Length: 478
Ligand SMILES: NC(=O)c1ccc[n+]([C@@H]2O[C@H](COP(=O)([O-])OP(=O)(O)OC[C@H]3O[C@@H](n4cnc5c(N)ncnc54)[C@H](O)[C@@H]3O)[C@@H](O)[C@H]2O)c1
Image (tube, rainbow, N blue to C red; front, side, top):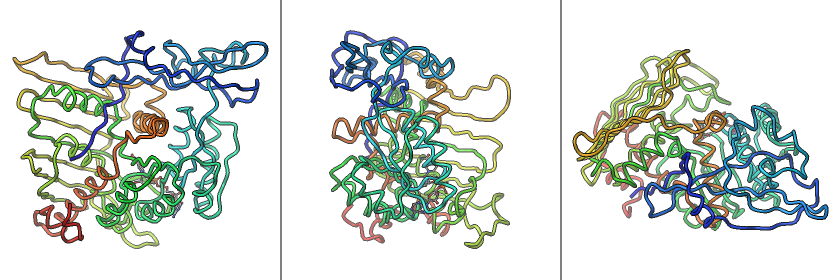
């Protein structure tokens, strides 16, 4: 059954008393000037387990205390602090280090190497440094343009030089690196994970974990045996709308027993990529694996059950019909309708159109006592259209409400509506706690499995029985 972790949530009112209980005082001595450029730390707010609707801020970073010219780090208090405010008005440069309290930050505690420094690798570089508790040690990428762009991305939030590795093995084995972030094209994840896992370092690997069912299962097994943290890039769970939907539907159980989960994504065509790997099903796994594994992960999560049967219909209706690159003609879907039946009777559906002049996604959950609809919209128009919306209808059972879940602007703009930022918060919290909190590799396996089933159904025109599909892939035991 898919796992879920309590969503990271931000609220205006935190309970200072409980927050103090969560403070972990760590004292450390530093010589003045030994820290890196100060940046505002994450003011992370978490839900206390087993206490519904109660949120506390966890001061994640530490502040300066100056005594006899010695800089000591003390835990920050429970003051609110805003990166937006700091970035916009440059307050952090207005006081000397010795006077910094709110503006102070500890030096990053972890160093990550990024394997594959294209679009997503650069987002991870920016977000790692922006989050502040880790920094980027170096990158490995065979494409010189990506390496140059990675240096630019790194310089936004860090003064440190970026190491550039020759072979991938060197990036994985460098003792200066604590963790590895794998953001290579989908078909290369399996080899990259095999090499990376030998290092025993913490690993964050992008979605989809693999392009085939056997590779996805092998990665799930590697993750299971891995001593370090192994997290997968299914970070849509941390988008504000889905974090709230998870909280309402799975933690508060506001909707009662969920019976139907339907999702939609209407967006523009797949972006250009290095080597255009995303235009070929054999390299990406196909559209329903490459992109849609995020949505299948969410549908699996809300269904709280295993998929039993999948039926899908789709085509290449508009995009890349004329596309021909050195690898040949594109063969990917740009629209599909997918129906998933779960073992517990829940029904899921997913509708995709990749020729819309916007990025729009939506989830509708219907339980036996309520309905939730949440959406995210980026339409590039001026005016007042809401970026995110969440509505819950309880009829005559409980109060209905409409909200606009969001994170602060600097976090939302750091990538994927803030989801990547909170993915990093979870990754680093997991490293700190020695226990993985993020979506598991097995969750990622099931999201790939549904994607492969849907691609197969489109190709054959038949429904796909999940047990048969597992058997065909030598996974009868699951
Ligand atoms: N989580 C998300 O929402 C999200 C969003 C976008 C992309 N992704 C995933 O991130 C991964 C990378 O996607 P992208 O958009 O950055 O693609 P990209 O083409 O922009 O970047 C991929 C980079 O990997 C490099 N590369 C290729 N083979 C390599 C190898 N064997 N070793 C090291 N580097 C290699 C390329 O030179 C390129 O710089 C994919 O798995 C993709 O699905 C996830």
